[in-house]
Image 1 (tube, each protein chain N blue to C red):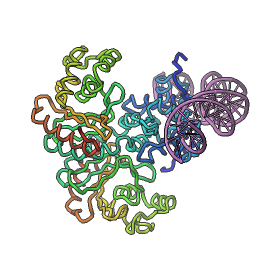
Image 2: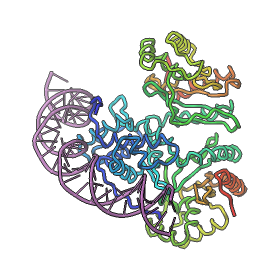
Image 3: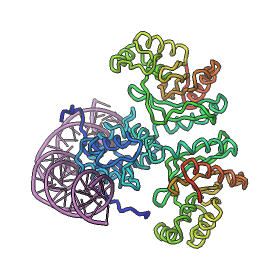
Length: 254
Length: 254
DNA sequence: CTTAAAATTCCACATTGTGGAATTATTTCA
DNA sequence: TGAAATAATTCCACAATGTGGAATTTTAAG
């Protein structure tokens, strides 16, 4: 049930989304000309849509006339109620783990074939892994993703493999179906999953799943550290925190 | 139909924004019927626009068919580059302050007549002030807001007072023009500002301004604490952090 | 100061979005 | 459980809405 048939019907909205994506792709305010080229829209069309986005505060204009994303997005993104309690429940545990273990703690949710970094707590030390909230990573290159795949079962893993072709992000990425299936199933059995530099060389993760009242997987909790700092003792800590969060979310095992 | 036609606006985009606002106003997934009533749109029209928003991931549907805001908003909101470096530069200082002082540190930016909470770092202790990132507060009830008003000058303060009527949030809110002007000007002179339960009873803040290369005010940094825990020593700490952040942003005083 | 390039406005046109009505799915309650 | 009520979704004829090329204005470059 992962692929949803979503046929878009309204042209302007697709184009508005295109424009905002294009703006977001840059790290500085973008000129109209660039946006036109980037999206393939006629300048006048892009201009008109941008004006409308501006009047709704989805887009702003800086002093040099460049376009940048607007505060409305920040405002709306904080009303994502789906997971408001998930975030609220998890944050204290995440802070505690972060303080004690001294590494970045991530909260991720699944969407289709990717996990989205939904919240993070980073330690106050020079070097640490810094995931960008809102960014995405394919399921098969993350600890939490492999747990989610494992839970979905072998059929779903095969289907996922066919859909995505298991692109390799590093030399450690599990790019063959058999290896991925093994890893997912082992992870499920153990109740946690490792990522051994499979998404990025140098970064090692440990992940666990969070469950809610219904017993559904609600999200995943993970710790990301420079690989040489990762400790096996953390597995137990993370599992414990995950279980407590799940309990707070109303999950009653058994 | 009684709208003032100020600018070229695209109807569908206005309506899409209306719908997302309406969804955001609720704390649970919303039904189509409700959205139709809330926005005054015909069900079929609302439905069509929502489908388009869904296919662009601005909106999602939960298992019961209710509409909720989508992950695209989270993704885009984290690409607000206007302040990407502001956030990056400030966060380590915010963490350090939060660790050392044990209270919530906020990063705010101005937009029109409000400040927007743009980033926060909260301490790991039972009771602390928890601002919601993305939420807004009128300038005259916040420490940083009063500094921004003061910097804009007395004319702007008067104009602001006329526009907003200085609504009182608590019995301490500065609701008269003269008191507000005094507070703003004193704040500017001192280089910091206090909020003595002016936004919420029980909460006391200290705020300072952040400047960037151009010398423009880029944002504000503040500490929010239960009023009885607030310490005068923090003023110096906050000012020092603010100055260092400004220096990192390229500001050269004098 | 001149020229070039980009941004903005204009406008005739038909594509696109509209909303009432019809159909289908879901919920309510007897 | 089934029938009535309510909500969700699809359909479609129509014209209002958004379109993009060309004209105009503004800004940047030489």
